[in-house]
Image 1 (cartoon, rainbow, N blue to C red):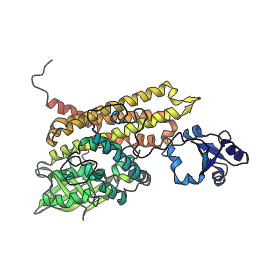
Image 2 (tube, helix red, strand yellow; image 1 turned 60 degrees about the vertical axis):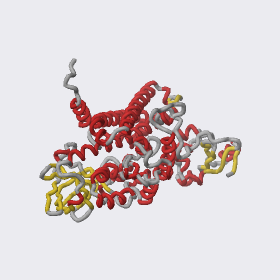
Image 3 (cartoon, rainbow, N blue to C red; image 1 turned 90 degrees about the vertical axis):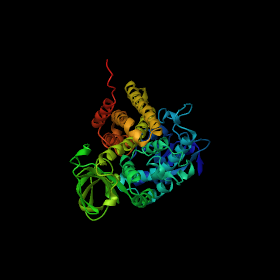
Image 4 (cartoon, rainbow, N blue to C red; image 1 turned 30 degrees about the vertical axis):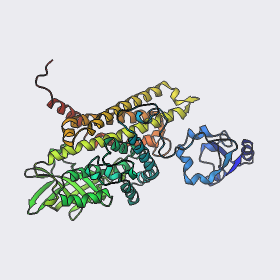
Length: 512
């Protein structure tokens, strides 16, 4: 690559060539201008072209623009004796921006929860996600297409699908993330890392489309399926060869699980299932459905394969169609009795207990996304110049940043505390002792997230209203943060659940 001096750049500029210097790289914009008569960028202004345009560039464009292949032809060389000041982060890098990372990842801080193995696992996961998943996430979020089989195969190869089910016997014999963590070492803090890292791309629709349906629908199969069904279905799903969704929610019932109207009537060795399910994540492309049905003796959970009578229709939502959100219809579907996951009168307890892990996973993702927004706003406040000063010089902006930081740090500490308790409890103990706490934690984290979305929008101004450019991450977050507050139980329902669980455990002798 050729090196230029500043004087050479200025000389060429006087000869009607358009040059800009960005981070010690020299860009020739004359060809760009010819392609777009009149120019389309303020970087072509006389006050910018041919000079050091670093500050002007970062006031208008995200750093990722510099790495896009379509702009490579514009790079002419480097300035002699100059080194890049703003380098594009290497995949796996820990951010140095204050509060951009949880304290356990920041230099000089200590943690009682995370061990050296968690740090190695985190580095490997962040590197893999940034190199493999992020490009796919951006493509799918924009196109609305489901995750490609190629990326699913890579997720399966690293056993990421299996790890997102949490610790358990399903991990035995598997080589997790290339052997960095052993199956018996894997705990909920490892899974926490997975859930927070996948939320860092500002692609909320794709996040659900990254087989979130399996995370909430396969656990009942793992725990309750007969051996023959288990041995056939679980390997298919964990290998990414087949897909599965949780089909509980109905337009009729919503959060009222006890009010489901999809019916299953016994006829010999089959169930005859009729009804509809709505807002089913990954439903458009799923091969299996874990379905809550109403029977004579209560609620029953069945595993239903996509077969005659099972139809799905995509539902248009505020986030990307990459999530595969579906309206599912069961029309006289014949389901073998062998596909019954639980006893006919135990379905409700299974459904309710399954919500604990689902809600916790949503919490972790919501926390990761909220942390990402804090970093976006900290960077923007530092680099955006208004009235001749950085945006951070405005007291009102510092106040918003303070509130955002306070919220995410409070969420972080509560999440770590609950996760630690999960590591020391059985599934039954979690249902007994943590169901209410997880419910309260979820509504707190999601409410904090929506308040942060509002503050971030004000920090970015008009840029937070566009789906591309400097504020695209904030725009996506503001538009989609409400999903976390609804999926897995609305905030109002969870507040009530948390308090009701607490009141059940009130000692009778407690008096003022």
